[in-house]
Image (cartoon, rainbow, N blue to C red):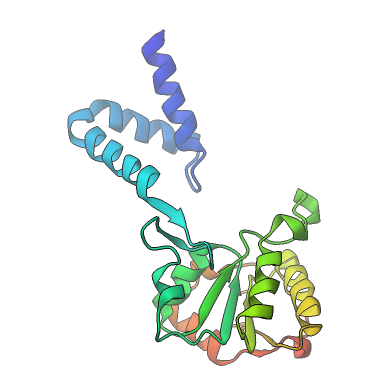
Length: 206
């Protein structure tokens, strides 16, 4: 039946969103179907707005608008552009900003090195990172990368490459629980982690 096919398409689309499984997608799809007058028009308008106006910053990778690119952080005259914080994803930038613990600029890698899932260094925004460090007068790179095996491997790869550029490289202190992530860390823990950061060469990963 045609209407059932359309409903199933909606469920499949919702299931692709992070944190939404099949059952949650089914409940959301049913709610939308039953409350079309209340929910559907605002949802369509919001999605169209995202399609028309939202993009990622050409410089750091955070979510911004087409009219504000580079983003407000990268364009700010009050940020310390000599300190560059490297994160895995743009969500991490938003989490760090909420902690009010950092006044430099950011660079999102859009992932991390993961041989198990086929993510290689060239699949990340590493070339752009090294170009920024070489050309933008960066004095310190802070690696705010999650503390698990893949995060450690990514941090080690970056610190080795940056060593050849002669730039100071640090990694935030391990106030963040092992096998956890920046996005799920409370602001106080994030602030302590930034205040207690160490030179990457002095971190014992064993």
